[in-house]
Image (cartoon, rainbow, N blue to C red; front, top):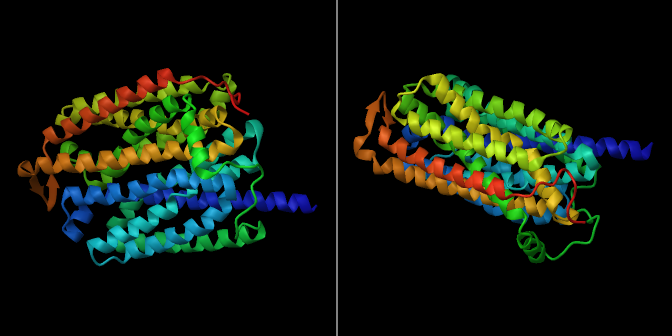
Amino acid sequence: MESSVARRNQILLVGAITGIYFLSMFQRAAVPGPIFSLLQQHYALTAAEVTLLGSVYLLVYGAMQPVAGIWADRWGGGFLVVLGGAALVLGELIFTFAANMEMLYFGRLLTAFGDGVVYLSVLKEVDRTFTGKSFAPVFSIACLIGAAGGIVATLPFRSLVAGVGMRWGFALITLISLVLYAFFLLQARRCGCLRPQAAAVKHDAPLRAVFRVLGNRKNYPVIFAVSLAFSICFALQVVIGVKFLQDRMGMSAVDGSGFIFMMLLVYLAWMLVAAPISTRFGSRRKTFLIGGTTCALIGSAILLCGASGALPGWLILLAFCLAGLQAGNGAVSASQLRELNAPELVATAVGILNAAAYLLIALWAWIIGLILDAFADQVVLVDGDQRYPAGAYVAIFLLFVVIAAASLFCALMSKETNGVRQVQ
């Protein structure tokens, strides 16, 4: 009976962390993407300053990933969320009531620090609670719930902001975060996670763990293929997608957010079925990676052609959806890395993958801001919004095509694992 209660509490702990992961994904997607123009208007920011707001967040988040992976492997995911959740909520409060640009940046820094431990904490707790073939489907469901946070940050949140204002919209999200974090702390206390948990296996020193992952050459094609393709999807979602649709397709911010919403629905639907389909067909990981990166390349090429606004809306929507498909392979790709590394290195390996992905996104966000500002003399004001010319978006999507092509090349070089762990 006692073991049954402990098992139930552990599952509830995974659920609570997954809920915080939902909020984490919301925070990643909500700024600056759907409120790009509002930030420019309310705080008198340039395009580079708005995209830098996203870059600062992503730099901190990316840099946290290897560290969070090591900590999760050594001390458990529950304890990390005790610390990270507090930083997340505090960062949300500061950002919500920021009176100037400096406070905006400080709030996002704290939020990024808190968010930086959540994904790998979910991974570690799912790996600890659900073993064997149940890992990929359960982790896929957790990723699905997290991705739903990103979807809420698009059309639903932009519609909320249109109704109640940007500050009150974020205040509501902060209140929800406080309630969920309080529930998590209660569950963490029941599971003994308010302090570091003893590792189930003996671990290397932190730097040695990183070197072991980096020393495994089979990791590199997966890390680069996934991070490059994912960075395109996330840059569209968080940085430039809505702005492009406003400037070149003549959409409102709400309608543009609807396109991102549809892209994420496709991503969400694929995430739900990708892991079971992979398992059904011999746990083929490489095949899914090649397919996802090919979709990213096709989607980027369509957007490049549509930068002048000459393509119909349905084709642009298709391009967004194709660019988002590889992100839906998240659980399959995490499983591929899991099978290429020893059990005590799983979170560290995925942490390095995440670091690569989000540092790349931060770099693209910075470059996108520079590209937009390079065309500042061609900007046209429409109802107070700054509209950028076609040339700016041609340059941006040409960059995306190059990134996607490199991603596909790396996918072709990766090793098929067929669901079998290659290292014990």
